[in-house]
Amino acid sequence: MNRARLLPFAALPLVAAVLWFAVPGLPGPHPASGSPDRQGARRAEGPGLAAPDRKELAQELVASAENSTLNWRAAYGYIEDIGDGQGYTAGLIGFCTGTHDLLSLVERYTRDHPGNGLARYLPALRRVDGTDSHAGLDPGFPAAWREEAKVAAFREAQDAERDRVYFDPAVHRAELDGLGTLGQFIYYDAMVMHGPGNGPDGFYGLRRRALAEADTPAEGGSETAWLDIFLDVRRAAMKRERAHHDTSRIDTAQRTFLDDGNLGLDTPLEWKVYGETYRVAR
Image (cartoon, rainbow, N blue to C red):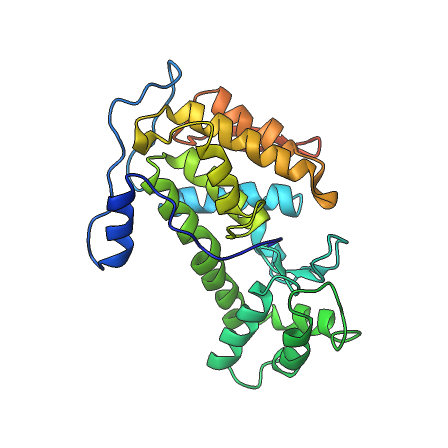
């Protein structure tokens, strides 16, 4: 992941959201019914993005933008410095040595699997956390990462960290905001790229900026109008980042689904990222 952290509580209705987080087991707020949306929009039904087939689709959509492939499982061993100021970017979700999530992954993995091939780099990972430095990581860390990615337990650890830090919080926040499957994916992709942070360009900072311009469906607003505004805010944030000036993952993918009224993220889907066309027919 690239970028900022710290999860805020910004939800409406405010009392319901605070109680939901404060009291374990208390049901979360329900989306407002009857929200106006673009005619013909297809609303999500059932479990949304967390359904196994939709979760698989979400990983393919992210992989098309992050790694130019639908084969997201091929990314477990990926590692390089992409020049975005976050050090090494690695693994299936782009964990970064400069943004704490890669360190957290290796710490958790080492706790469960002492003596793994990455454990010896933990002191260096702690030192470079928050920077773009490779100090103590070169030349061996990239090769060690690729080798460890051949181990099933490490691939499972990447899956678990992806869900804990990005997927589950994004889907949960989207559900509280009254969003269907497409909105849940839009939140997830934003969480992956911008990080679960409360800073200006972290996920929650982007959401806060969108709240200044529109109401969420849970507040009685239009789902389509809310997602339009959120994508506008996110696109502007991407344009400010040196490594993310290409906004096709929004312009010719997520925006296309929204303009088609496909709020359920129903297949078949066709989209473009960086000029390349992808299709999922199932």
